[in-house]
Image (cartoon, rainbow, N blue to C red; front, side):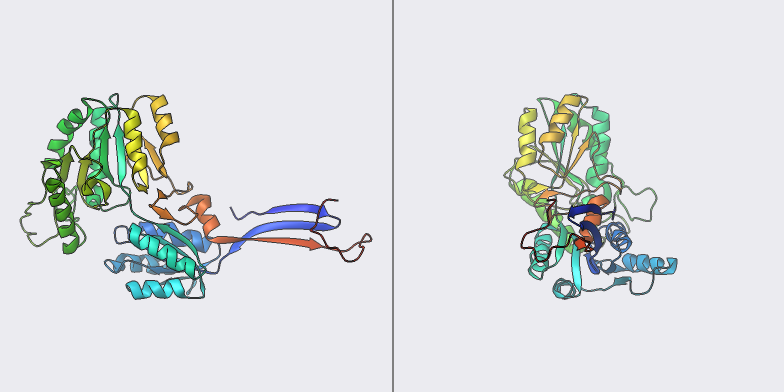
Length: 381
């Protein structure tokens, strides 16, 4: 992946070659929800490309990232190649402004992603900033509804909805599709096994903080006030033995419209909105008009419809009968629109290009045809 190009004799006795070289020192600023996985998107590629790396994990759960760094050092990475710093905004600003740091990778909310992108670029750094999402699942009438039900449950309520690839909007197409989905998922949501993460029977754990719990409840309040139909209400969950925990039940709104705050804004919690569409074209239009463009999925048994959706949706990651379309590591991925800032995706060749910079050399070894000063660019003539 670091291979360059070589062309001999581009001019008389002149050769040109290009290669990709390390940037030097890179930094990664990572979110609370995946304190192991997201750093692993960053520093292995950066170090493999020849860089040193500074990791700034979320101040909400830095211990996992610290353990990861300790294990990497134990595995033999030289001291100083992988580094970790703790802190909040002051630490982030120090990273963005430091002259020795050439590139910054970020994963988090869209407002902070935009801030990181703008500030780092102001100081001349290469930036890769992944932001928020509002991921839609379009369901065609010919879809396997049992598969759809299982896909909704896992993609909406896994990790308590606190992940940028969570499905938060389902768009059923046709007259009866939404009713079929509601009939399948309503009892599933009501019977979600909610509890502490160390319980092997738990299907959904707590939210990250008390403040975030209140934020999610406030969004549910807003949805009710805006006129959406609250089919399943998770606000009043009481978990015996964990009364002071940050637990909330799964919530499900029907008849949501695109002007409601629960549709427009990222809730980052276990709340599903259903926006009904009469036709496929209208469903596609709903997906494309949202300001976020991180991930989307379509469930159908029609290959032509799936192909049209894949080609025409303005979204960075697309799933066909796959609810969370994050690919394997040797494929690059990332969002579009306000879900990503900067010119490179995560992983794969995009990551290699982000953590390196192109150098091109044009050289001459004079021979008998040297004729003195030249006032033009090298050419083949």
